[in-house]
Every structure is written in C-alpha cells, then in structure tokens.
Image (cartoon, rainbow, N blue to C red; front, side):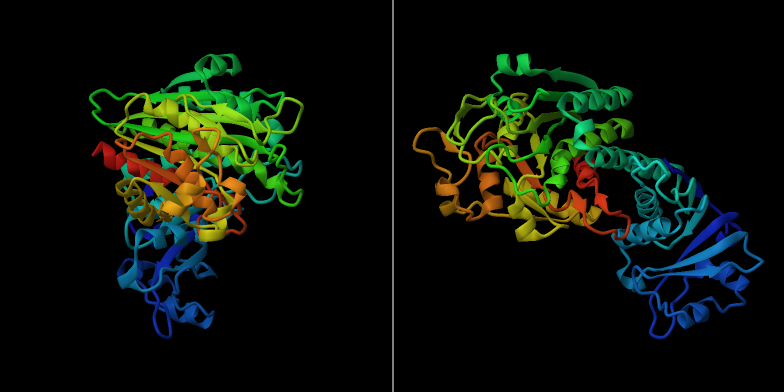
Length: 485
C-alpha cells in the first residue's frame, strides 16, 4: 500500500520525482492559484503560457507533463486541470488527484498541491494508487508510487484517507480474485482474518449450522457446489454507541446461473458477483479502524451457484430464515434468495436501519448504466444514500415500487414468487427490490443498493482503474458517520 503523507510549506521545495499542481480553466490559458506562485517563479512566470502552448487550458481532468526547471526539487511537473474555480468540488479534486497518481506509476515519490479540501485530494490520490497485483510472472508493469505527500492535508485527514484507501483496496482485491481461489469457505476465512485484525467479533455458520438455522435460500443456491456455503456475521460495538446499523451483502463467489445457465459470453465476469458482500465487509472494517461511534452488524451470505445433481431447480419452493416460502422460477436470480436469508437474520437484531448491497440484476445496468447505483426501499433511506452518494462520487438513483410490478411477484403456491410470473422482464431491477422488501419489516428504515454496473469499470477514469471499483464502500462509511453523529 502506498504511504500517504501530509505535507506543509511551499510546493516549490518538494523533493520528489513528480510534483502535481492543480490549475483552473481560463479562456486562452490556465489560471494558476496564488499558492503556486513559488512554482510559477521557477518557470520564470511562464507556467500558464507553457501549458497553453501544449493545449492545456485547465479543463477538468486534463493532464500535461513538463520537465521541472532546475530550481524545483522535482524531476517532473504534472499540471492537472480542475475546471472552473467557482465550480470546484470534492469529487473534482478526487478525480484530478487520482488521474495524476495513475499517470505517475513507475515513479517512487509524488507530491500534490491543489486548492480546495486536502482530504478529498488525499482520498483521490490513495484510490488512484491502487493496483491489483494479479498473477503475472513478469511483475505486471509499473508499480504505484511508494509515497504520496498532499500539501495542506492534516495528519487526521491523511489518516482517514488512508483507511478509506485500504478498505477499498481490500474490496478490490477480493472482487478481482479468480473464482477458483475465492470459494465460499475460503472467502469466509479471509473475511475473518480482515475482521479480527480490525478488532471485530466474527461468527461463521457452515452448512450444518445453516440447515439448523433454517437458511433455505443460502443452502439452495449453494447446494450445487462442492464448496459449501457460509454465512458470516461481523460485530462492531464501540463503547457508548447508541445507534445500531445493519449492513447486508450478497456474496456469490461465482454465478453460472445454475440450471437457468448464463451465456458463455461474459460469464467470466461472474467472479464479481460477491462485490456486495466485499463492500459491506470493507465498510465495517473501515468503521472499526476509524473508531466510529455507531454499532454495526454486517451479515454476508456466501455461496457458489453451480450446476450439478444437487443444484436447485426452477419450480422448487424454498423456506427462508423468517419462515416465508418462495417459489423459484429462475435459478439465475439467486442473489435475492441468499439476501432474503441474510436480511431475515439481520432484522432479528432490531437495528435502527438496514442497508443491503448486491450485484443483483442486469436490469440495473440497462436502466442506469455502469456508474449509477439503483436505490430501492424506504423513501428516507434511499434519499439519504442518494444524497451521500452525490458527495462521495458514488452516484445512485431511487426507483419506485409500482403496483403493477408488485402484483407480478405474486405466487399461486408460495408466499412470494422469486421473480415475475412468466419470467416477465418488466421492471427487472425493481422486481429484485420488491422481493427483498418482503424480508424487511415496514417499521425498519431500509435501502437496497443494486451495484451490478458500478461494481466494476470497463475503463480507467479519474481515481478508478479498469476492473473492480470498490463501490459503495465510501458511501457506506459516510452513512455510518452520519448515523454516528
């Protein structure tokens, strides 16, 4: 993990390989903030003119590399556009810092001097420094910088950014792991190790305990795999905390679709189907490391959805932990079944609010794209998640539960149908949320976050590398901070 440091003094004296400066947009040339006067002096007052000559007028996200003049204690200067100074916000800073750090891979030391909130800059920098090590025998290319100094960041701001970066990196590592190396029992052990290191209490239910506890959804989905399912619960109980928040995650370590088998094209991406479980664990670990004054219980259901003689079938009827019966119509709608069990267990603790996270439906991707979560549940909580997601840069959009879609979920032989009768695709994303609502009592505030698209990115942008994104860890942490306050 890159070492993130606070820095003070004049950026012109930074002794690093790369000095990153932020410039604002202007009509013909970028506008330099007053804080860069010392750096500009080393360019004989011509930094803005040189950038303009190279085509950089300060537009947000633009980046220009310059050799540093002899007077600077740096090898290179990276000028990153921050857009209009009047429109500067935290997400612009995070993206600009991440862009610069990703461009500085292969360099050992980096210093960043931006206007605006230093903590946002530090967060973007540490997120941008992530690299999945993978399994390449040649090392896999340039390494992330060994240290990043952020001017103006306090020790506390750097420490918080570091915790967020570590938690997001943990999630990305898990989501990027090959499915053969992260099956349910292995994932449960890795979660336990991360949780214990953060001082959390851990409970792991194996297949026998799941059977005794009536977890019919998890057992059915995991029944086709030789790697038996698990349910893992983490508890964070700081002294004096009054509120209790439940986080719930879907952890399908690989999803073949079962007997409703997926097409071969794209099935390799189904190792990502545990991103929801990874995210809620990462947020809980971060809460403990940050010492947030709120009780958190994290429940994740882990299973591998495969085809075998013991796999569950369309037409099966399952009994969930809370006693409700479910008619199965599509074994590829498995995530909601394991979440039904996990939600049922989570609400037994009578939390003040519940948030569940899942790569639940392809309908989310179709409706909202790759960068916007689908939000469903209690109006107050979906709006809270939307608002906080705007602040963190992990955007979400609340969806309704129309009566006609609710009616489609009725079953003639069980309490509820797993998906719409006749496998109608009407409101596909919404169907998943409606189903999950059956397992959360109306009096408990609840939000469901469908991250099927945002869990991974098909391209690099800002502080996000191609692949696993770690969404919505930072939003969950901000939610917990708000509840703690």
